[in-house]
Length: 631
Ligand SMILES: *[C@@H]1O[C@H](CO)[C@@H](O)[C@H](O)[C@H]1NC(C)=O
Ligand SMILES: *[C@@H]1O[C@H](CO)[C@@H](O)[C@H](O)[C@H]1NC(C)=O
Ligand SMILES: *[C@@H]1O[C@H](CO)[C@@H](O)[C@H](O)[C@H]1NC(C)=O
Ligand SMILES: *[C@@H]1O[C@H](CO)[C@@H](O)[C@H](O)[C@H]1NC(C)=O
Ligand SMILES: *[C@@H]1O[C@H](CO)[C@@H](O)[C@H](O)[C@H]1NC(C)=O
Ligand SMILES: *[C@@H]1O[C@H](CO)[C@@H](O)[C@H](O)[C@H]1NC(C)=O
Ligand SMILES: *[C@@H]1O[C@H](CO)[C@@H](O)[C@H](O)[C@H]1NC(C)=O
Image (cartoon, rainbow, N blue to C red; front, side):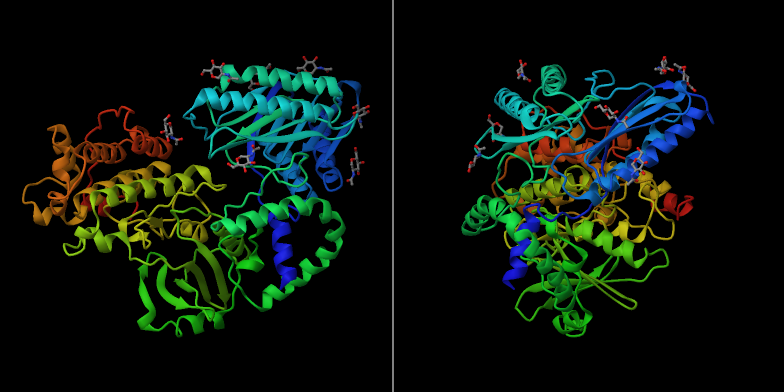
């Protein structure tokens, strides 16, 4: 047992790395060559040589020459903190493949991944500082609140990192450094710089200085920036994106502890471990293998405090008998409900922990076992206050189970439509729920490693904990059933009438903006306490719910949408009106017009941001769906 805990810490500190798919960042290319030329065949040789050398090197340069005019020069570099040859190799292999797609028939190309870069050209560039083909990437960047303070901190931090990287190694050695600094009481900026090791220290410094000098022009106030040169790059972010221990600068572990006492233990470990680690590492490795074998036999749910990084198939897999015992053999008394992908049961483990078990329905379009497991690991790594946490899974014959944390209160629909319960949700609670859902969706859409489109957002999929903090459930399940993420398999419509955007309901097209649509409907329902699909029966005019809300807004009386139950209580008319307005922006017909999730969160948090007028909301009827190609 102590062995398992120690291993757990070491993994979480980045000593034992778990592989994830490499993440493409950017590419640049120039110059044409003709198809089926000698250059092309040399290039293919070069790429395969680079990717085979990535099993043993973190940086490698090579040349493939036949005739003088068709020589191809190439190199790859894996990020300085990556100490796992498997990760490096996977990245270089992915880059070698992708560069041919991104830059077909180009004489010169560079492709950057988060974990590595790969470059080739028809001229020798080894040992030469090169500043052509530079670019920057601001994907998913937000403007920081206090941009002066932030960019001052950034400028200092990256300069220190650049100095450290340039000094880090002699010719041929890693020129890499990370550095972090606090720019406010609660926020830290993490930066990473690296040069290709063939540069001299001086050239490395010059290259990074050039990049730093560009920052005010491109990226002022942005919180997530990558600046790429062929010979060096820098990156900074508000969350840590590199491994810890190998980096020369010590920094606190990427663990968000729930309890203070544990946090200080972890920090102590982080300081003590690096020195002791190397000595202990050999011992641990044997222990680790042993632990994995044991974990297969005896399943144990992960502790809340343990970092996301250590999640593996082994740590998630549990056996059917445990779950059967916990759920009383899936007894009807334990059934909590029926979701889109199967029935949900409450369970209590022998240690008293409460769980919710989803028994997945069988489907012909399901993924293979290995794919299923990998997908579950990815989903389990998605952890956010506003998402229901996936704790484990169980595969036994035909049976596929997902084990989730148990959330105390029922789903949102149980409260908002029920006249006896509506009073439990004050305006401030409702506002908190709206903001919480928005943050959960933002995490799914932008902030996690995966980009997850939920596709079935509705009040029934929003659970509330004891403090009425919302938690989104059922996210990512579509991934377990389908390969294509941009177009749904017609045999499985994940989605619920009333919450599906028109382009999804009518044509099966879904995107981040179809989730935004569903969220807009949810906002308006939370405000009004009305179910948009049963609005007709109660209102005898011909209007649908969304048009009714829009009309109130148009008449300048949006707060009239507010649930009658709240009229006598305290609420801010301005806040209600703003939420109605944001809801209406989300349900506009043209997906392009709907705001991005990041914008929605910003609009909800900052009342001074002006809102554009919403277009009349989309309307489609059930008959249209029945007639569409899609159903
Ligand atoms: C590389 O290709 C470019 C574009 O085709 C060409 O202008 C240049 O002369 C080539 N360089 C060498 C060294 O062959
Ligand atoms: C490269 O090829 C593309 C299309 O094949 C063409 O549009 C472009 O002008 C070419 N560039 C050069 C420099 O020859
Ligand atoms: C590394 O690349 C060289 C060519 O530069 C090639 O001959 C060699 O086989 C590669 N090494 C491995 C381990 O594949
Ligand atoms: C790799 O780069 C160095 C210069 O940094 C150069 O001397 C060496 O010849 C290159 N190796 C190959 C195989 O081209
Ligand atoms: C933004 O700045 C304001 C005042 O400058 C502060 O009250 C607020 O908490 C900040 N928001 C964030 C998300 O840091
Ligand atoms: C950042 O702030 C935390 C506490 O607010 C502190 O423990 C930590 O040492 C600070 N880090 C740096 C690099 O100043
Ligand atoms: C920081 O922000 C200020 C104002 O936005 C700008 O003038 C300055 O150039 C920025 N500096 C950097 C290093 O981005």
